[in-house]
Image 1 (cartoon, rainbow, N blue to C red):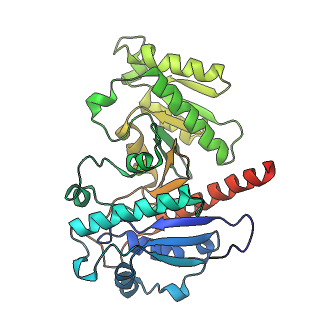
Image 2: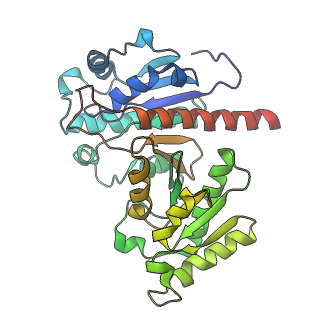
Length: 330
């Protein structure tokens, strides 16, 4: 695919688990002219997957602008049963992610966007898969990935994600500080020169002067102070039951959550259909939808593409910004 403009990004898209709604939301999102014009798109998947989704959505490749299918030859049509957990689909979904990651690492794509995979299907073929973010981080040999959720109303980065709550409570000041730094840098890449960062406490009332626990004072506060010394506009630890309201009122640009549900619940409550997952701490740009495979509606032309559209827009924006920065310094 030839680039029409020096700053036009090339973005790889994985279709996710072929039995889920991933292929459908990809097709619907790229059928929108406002999205398709933002980049040149490489859809990583297989022809049987796309043929099945073309029947559902009517989104044929000849009608999708700026898009091409990169055939991975991973899934036989006979093994595709839409709406069912399937080991073959789990294996294909992982391979699509490997291929898209390699495209980015080799400079053949400027960013990647992932549709949802099924952890249950992947568990049928391999052990130890905890999520996209961690899997891609291993492929990139990046030891400290973080998850940032972005919507028009709220942005949340997580100190921990796919671990038990018991383990998430074992805080580490260095990890909290690193999360603040990664979130701050990501918002700068999204166009905010001096992001205002608010850091959640772990305990009720952020510990209330050690009345409800010592973690806030012993681990989170030193990280906040260190971030301030580094020039980051950072406040905390603040009570988690009010911090998100403050962010919604535009008092802060980013909230740092200590664990998965602390950040995910307010984000999904506020903007489930349009939230985007951004992986931080990687050498590549990766965004994703913030929803699952939805096997119950797969293949029925009911899937809402709003989150995928947002993920594609954000990936294109970040890739274009990064390419422009490289051009400015070359």
